[in-house]
Image 1 (cartoon, rainbow, N blue to C red):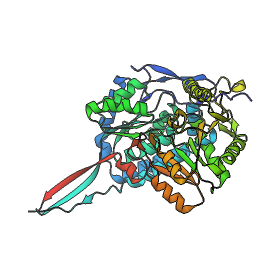
Image 2: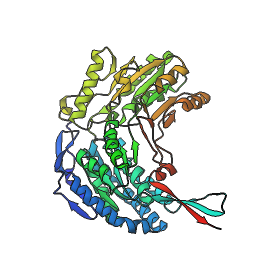
Image 3: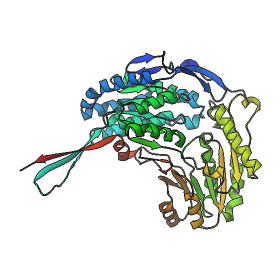
Image 4: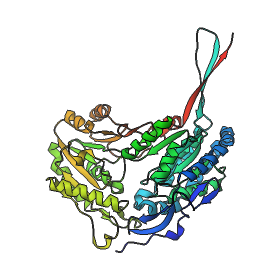
Length: 487
């Protein structure tokens, strides 16, 4: 079946949105956005340069005094209105986000609902940011601490889940009283631009949320700008290091949600059919997810059985057009990603890794897009690049283990520490293993999503700071302490 052409006529104009102004003549130039399923251009995207970042900062700083002065109930109601915007425009936003990054329907469909939940949740926090009254000595005094916004924050979101990322970052930042420069990537700009338009229509004051699509030049200008008080970045460790190099010169605080190489530990007493499906979920979104369980650790007595089950389930899942409801695996984001992933696969095969499934780029009716067959390698050495590097493609590495202790050791032997999965019917073992894993999030016997109420973030090279829950709003506030002399 030929790939369906995306409805590009429904896309927002890919310009900058600063205050209530559109800017399409930018010092940062422009770049073509390419739809991953066809390899064809959907539009010419305006990129912010240093000049436009400065204009956006001025807009945000001009809006900041009034936004900080809004009463908690006013801010609460605006965030509730934003949540309703996501619900009312869900179908449109899903369609736009699919053109953004070519995610299949099932993977894209939850984005607006998750964002709506985040804005509802953090709207509820807007009138509950209470401080503390603190005992002091030896002089009698009243001491209290309050939580205050940073001011203007720059939020850099990833291309693989832009709507979800807006919910997890922009919602708490606005609830805390910050104004925001939101930088979507040039690879997936459209959903964020449309969200900016919808927020203005919903009544958010101009300048509170500014959408400035940019490449490396604009991103660096954002990090370096003295008018931005904090940066939050979601993306790769390589880019994070460049951000930190720039931020250190101005001593700017940075929050980081980075990559992962998550272990999915399958014990012999697990529900193996469910465990096999969880192994395949390591390639959900064509493997383009930071929390994906791309290292599958299987206890040796059921090792070959699990491999056979994985093969069987893969045979029932469709690879193809992301706009078709039955598709499970779509393309990867662009040509460069496809070429890089194929090199990883070819190198692993040349070094003798056992291919259980996939292992090639797909042709035929899919040849114009960036489709790679879901690939499973068995008998992988945990010291190999297959097991240590974040491939960000539809590739999982399966590793055998003999004991619980060995499973924990292998899982922790990674530069990353974002997430992990444990499959077992032994509840005592599940809790014991979870406490030993050096990661920020653990799912036991299935992937249950990431509710807005839970802290989300990693350790080691998976970043620092937390999104979600009260930790998420603390990420965008700083305490202020006040002494009152009572003598």
